[in-house]
Length: 165
Image (cartoon, rainbow, N blue to C red):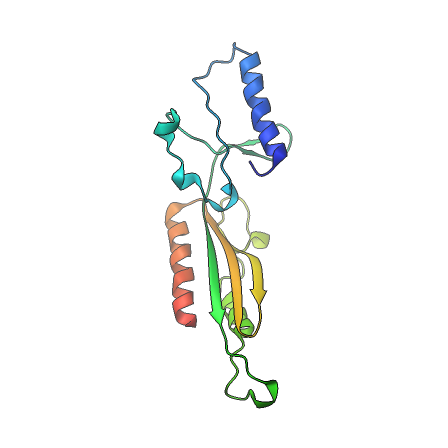
């Protein structure tokens, strides 16, 4: 669940099923897992130990809508290290990590970002940037519904990191 409203929606669905025994279903178990948006935590969830045959991520949007599919996701932190020297004597000495990070950002496909994708299109989502001349950290969410394309995206990030070094 993304927030308290998400938890309330899931618990309301369980309550509804309990109040309507005419709706056939198997045994229902509910667990809440943090960081579902970036795919963290689910890899530690043991479906069998939990006593379930299957596990689903439930998400929703508009009233009456239920999302029943999921995506592959990972987070990535890319750190760039620079060298800070006095600006008056910086020529051929200073390395500005912010500029290196900017070059890295521009190497990723511009059209494969959330603001240019929809539906099942995967993306690289820059969610954070913290920087100074000496060190800059970029934080990304990488997503794709297709597992092979997702793995390709991760490899591409790794390739660009090696290329930047």
